[in-house]
Amino acid sequence: MYTLYVLDDGRIGQDMIEANCAADLQRLGARLRKVVEARHWSSFPHVETADMAGGFYERLEALQGQRHTYYCGEIMSFSTLECCACYARDLVNRFFKENRCSAIQRFRISAADKLTT
Image (cartoon, rainbow, N blue to C red; front, side, top):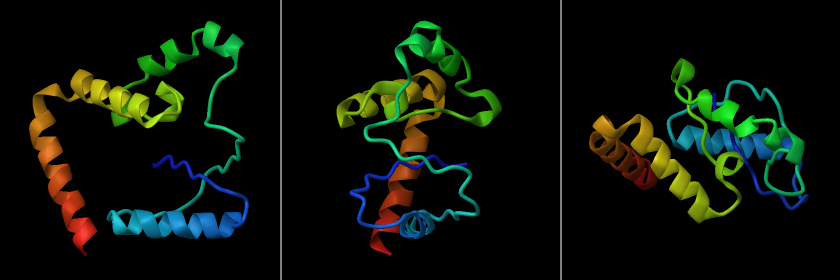
């Protein structure tokens, strides 16, 4: 399952957004089989104050790694590239420290291959 966030200025429709996402995933070696849900926000995805106070992030963090699933991105760290990158680095250090170097090297090689084809 992939979670994708698309910055949309309202000039293209949902069908075109899905076609663009499918093409991007295909370039990465993946395939879009089905769109489970599409939501439109006026800003990045976030939770309400009451949900945050009620332990939303603590419960979400407790799910990290369950069923081989990890959550990362704006919902976990706020809507700046720096915050997302810092959270992603922390996630890798917490859950993949032993295999970090080989996983990063495999990603770099894979990403380079995809960019040149």
